[in-house]
Image (cartoon, rainbow, N blue to C red; front, side, top):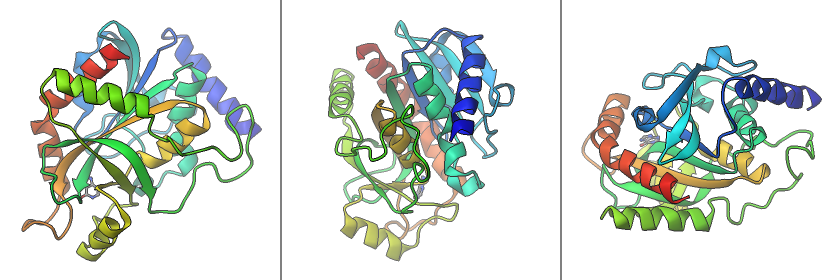
Length: 272
Ligand code: HPA
């Protein structure tokens, strides 16, 4: 644990030699990385340059931090995140969130591509995450706790800050966008779910399913950060449509809605 603190502080120290303390953290999911084009006065830092940072491998993710301004607010965006299915440990997946917290970031926007389980959802919809189901049952906080990072037993009653959900809904309204709201279920991947698993997740109360976000949300809450989660519904979940699932069509749908998505995120950041 002392080792982890040392690693967080080394990475933070390096980043502070390159950028000023940002206000807002942004994690860009599959196919959503182009949002960095909306950032002004950018400083780009490839993950490989940051001490102790893992390096990302998956298609559709570039693996760099982009710092700069959106609507006059200072943001630090992760273009490319780390997934459990890539083989990273939960410590590695959540390390950037620890670093963001150490940098002083208190508002974190997590974005992802997700399959729609709710029968009223369509590909191209955007869902505000109101809560999650950790279908892996794994927790990134397992192991010794360091009080400097957060409490031993963090509360998760408002894991996705109601105040930020409100900001997102108002931002969408001002853009005349219709947002969905629902529960996100975290699965391991990399295989997609079976139709039976999707039926089970629906019974459990999930509206969307994806392979990220939950470990980051847990660690952010541990550190007292406020989280906004946004899912791009890129496909109907397994067994609900006629088509089989594949990563290319997930990325293609995310690409199709990127304009609307980028506008929304920028408007949200402007209202924070
Ligand atoms: N399942 C899991 N993860 C996903 C999906 C899905 O259907 N779509 C995008 N990410």
